[in-house]
Image 1: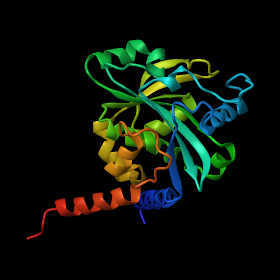
Image 2 (image 1 turned 90 degrees about the vertical axis):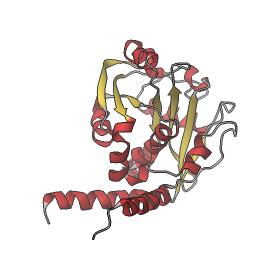
Image 3 (image 1 turned 60 degrees about the vertical axis):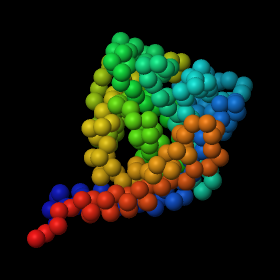
Length: 256
């Protein structure tokens, strides 16, 4: 078997494993009214482990961006146990609340001024034991961001990431560096600004990593307006991938 075939086979096995693991995953959206959701405690424990935030008596980590009306925050549960969390802001020219925009306004404001929009993920934290046991946990968590980029039809999905994590975003999402290294709010580490152009990378990411795929019903359940936070949303990557395979087969030219 050639090296290219071996890499493709390995990638296919990884994708199949992730889709199987998603059968045990649930996404739960955090209510803005719930000040002590377990997600905020998970953040605190993750940041305290590396001394990124000071000790506080409530043992939670929240900030003003959690209360923004364009903020969406989620916990990722496996077999009913909280293993990771992430939030994002859907940023448009008319609603510019965004942690990354606060750090790099001279880079992001011009994009908003010309009518572009973006998803700004932040507060990606994980349970320590779960992250050791599940190396694929970043994929399961960032799937939320991939779905949001599709649902809100944004041009960019940006990422404010530590230098040691940048290679992951370049490899998986094709992200390119937009901004220099700067400090991230009250956290005690610097981050760089990266961005992926969603219309350009959408199909390539779906083909390579089908576990990022989802059905409209799942996206509506997670992000739809007027229905409030959901208790539990089950992933639909397996169904979405099957539908994509069928559509691709139908689109293939018929031999004559």
